[in-house]
Amino acid sequence: MRLDRGGRALAALMVAAVGSGALAGCDSDQNRRGASPAALSGPTGTAGCGGKNKLTAEGSTAQLNAMALFNQFWGQYCPGKSVSYNPTGSGAGREQFIAGHVDFAGTDSPLAADQIGPAAARCDGNPAWDLPLVFGPIALVYNLAEVPALVVSSDALAKILSGRITAWNDPILAALNPGVVLPDTKITPIYRADSSGTTDNLQKFLTAAAPQSWTKGVGTVFQGGVGEGAPKSAGVVQAVRATPGAIGYVEKWFADQSAMPYARIATNKGVVVPLTNETAGNAVKAADFVADGNDLVLDLNPMYSSQEPGSYPLLLATYEIVCSKGSDPDTSGAIKSFLTVAAGRGQTDLPSAGYVPLPAKVKDRLVAAIEALQ
Image (cartoon, rainbow, N blue to C red; front, side, top):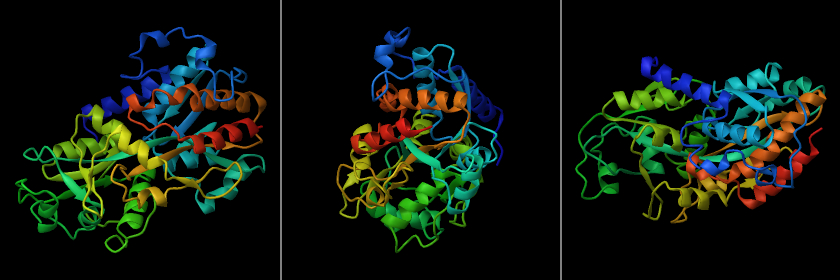
């Protein structure tokens, strides 16, 4: 499915916004302009402004709005500094980093096992690190004009996305939405057609939260076998809007900017959890690390499988992939400066941009890893 003129214009606008360090909604506080270095200091104090002025990065569409925010603060703290970020998708970002075409990659899934070696080779024989910089809630957007508030469970979602629930008035959905007249409209799942970390996180959520109903597996390619594919998050939003009865998955900020309704999730205990800044923030507290060290891959299964009444469990962590060592000093210095600001002052305004700031236990490890970059 192709983006129409409006979809292409939206994508172009967002790319241009990141390049200039601003995005609609990210500069509402006039006091940020001309802020002092002390106000924009990093988590361990004042970040240096060394290294080259222009960084290049590519990857996740999920972190596009966050990158615009981080870029804005970095440019204010270090005048003349900026990141040119190309939101081509997580898979493309990892490939471009490994090929040495960009300084770092943005991705919603860490390096795959078969990418670790090539990434180390790109880093002059040193490990590449996955550094989580932001959490992003995934919204289940839908197109049912007569249903302003929809509830699904992980089990129902798994059955929808694998073709076992095909109409909106299915008894399983009716039971989740008492008092709501659901139409007999055909359900059309809309999925990411490109290699997508958002898809990977969605399928990991279904595997953890509905293991009996989702047996399709995980990965950056959609495994459901039904529905229609659309390119990137902007394409998913456009396709859902254009298709009565459609349901898809995009980052919360995409849904909010597009004024798309999104479903609430019912836990196995029957508690309905809306997607809000508070419920998403509660959920990320369950995230943990896979291992010690500075390659900060997260274990999100405790979050995905959470049945806590105040936690919205469908989120992703988005990483920056960087060389731990081996980049030229101009590049490594600039990356360290940018990440320091992003991990510090950059976290404070994330909720207004549709994201969840890092919990303390993640931020502390991230700060140590940034300090260790060479």
